[in-house]
Image (cartoon, rainbow, N blue to C red; front, side, top):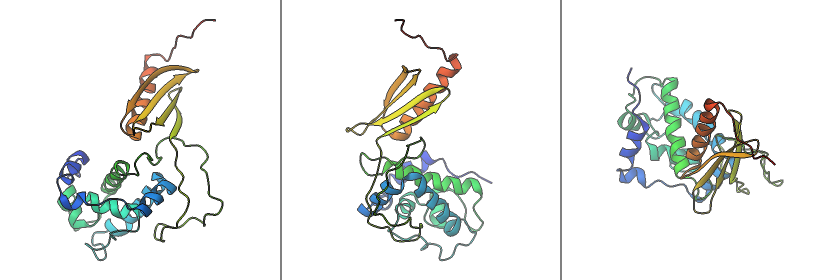
Length: 225
């Protein structure tokens, strides 16, 4: 069984499609993404894929994905993961059989990549690093399911993330110019830092730097007082 096409190849093709490029998150979808966070929204994506795309013969195939109402729906149309015909044409995943786990993961990865690239400017949704306690609007309604209409709630987001990996402390911070700064410290001493154009790239760079430091033996030179 052939593997799905590489996402870099898929996205290069999508970038040349006038139809796919016209999809954008509306104000309500942006607010929903900021409020719920990418992790929760991608959980919805997995559910949508499992119920509406994964079966060998999905109900109402070709029309099963709404054009609006949820960030995942917009992302599905933008990434051609909206129906089995588009999935076959753009991703090389044939129709007529159920999607396996790898193919489901591939579809969700495409959706997640598009959402990261098209999240509201300056407010990248959190996904990979620990973000600490999440602020809650005391007047907000109870959580809604993926199928329910998105409520008008206060949107919360974070611009600074921290984590610990390979014995190092990692930090990623957003800058007003849209770039992300990452730092890696040990015992308060900075051992590596850098800048990236996206949150995900900054996170990856910080983890790599921490891993490389650990492989070098994890030692640091402290100033003597």
